[in-house]
Length: 409
Image (cartoon, one colour):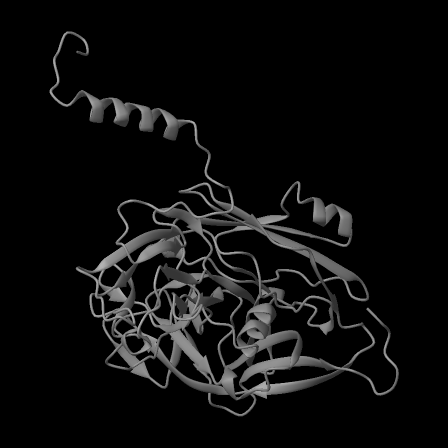
C-alpha cells in the first residue's frame, strides 16, 4: 500500500522505483555518445547532435549504425540534406566498415538556417533490414561566418595605394550584420581590437584616401549578427602598398555602352545629364588583367559644355543594369557618390577620387557586388556628353615593379 492506495502488482512498482533511483545516480562517460531512446534501433549516434545550434557552416554530417549497411542502398537518392523542402547538393559516402554514413555538402552551409538530414526507408543493412519509416534529425548553423579569405592577401606587398579590403561575407539572410574594422600601422593595437576604425554592413571597405606607402598596414575584422548576438573576430592580417618609386603607366578604357533615362524611357548610345535626365555608362573591366595595380583613376568624358555651374556627379549603381535592355526598366538603384567633377580639361569633363580608384581596383580584381556608373547633374542646364569620341573613358594610372632588387615588406 502506497499513500493509502492498494496496488495489485506492488513488486514491479518497487523495482521500477529502485531502478529509477539507481539511474539518477549514474554518470555517463563524457566521451561516449548518449544513445537516445527515440532513435530507431539501427542508429546509435548522429553528428551534429539532434537540435544542435551554432553548428559551423563547414560541418560534416554523420550517422552511425549498430550494424553494417548495404552500400548499394546508401546514396543521394536515399539520403537527403534539406532546408525546408529544398535539397542541398552533397556527396554521400559509407565508412567505418559500412556502419557510418557521411554527408559532405558541396559548398559551405548557409548561416543561421535549420537543416534537416533525412534517411529514407530504402536504406538496408547487409542482412536486408530496412527502416520502418523515414528517420531524420535537425540542427541550426551559426549565424555568422568566420572572418576569412582576405584581399589583399595576408603578407602581400606591392598593393594598390587605394587597395580595397575584402573578406568572407555573412549573407544578409542570416540577419542584421555589422562588421567592425580595425586598421593601423601598430600591429599590437590592431590585434587588441578595442576600438574599431570604421563600422560597415558590407563585407568590404573601399578606400576614400590613399594607404601610406612604404609602410605595413595591419587590419582585422569582427563580424556581429545584431539579431542573434553571435560574433566572430578574425585574425590580424597585413599588407604593404606599392612604394612611391614604382614605375607608372596609363591604360585608357573606352565606354562600352551608355544611355540616358528621362523619366519615361531610354535614349540609347547617348549620355546627358540634367535635373530630369540621368545617364549610365558601362566599361568592359573584365577585359583587363586582374593583376593590375591601380594607383588612381580619372573618368574623362568629352563635352563642349562648361560643368562649373551644372554640378555633375559620378554615382555608383547598386545593381547590375543594362540600359535599353527590355529586361531592365527605369534606372538602377543608386547607392552613393563615387567622385565629384574636378573640372574640364581639353573639352573633357573629369571625375576623380580615391574612392573611384578603389572601386575600379575591386572590379578589376573580379570582386562581385560592385557595378557601373551613373551620371547626374545637381543644378543648371543640361550637359551633353560625347562618350565615344577618341580619348573618352576611364584613365587608369597603374603601377609596376621596377626591374632589379625590391625592398622587403
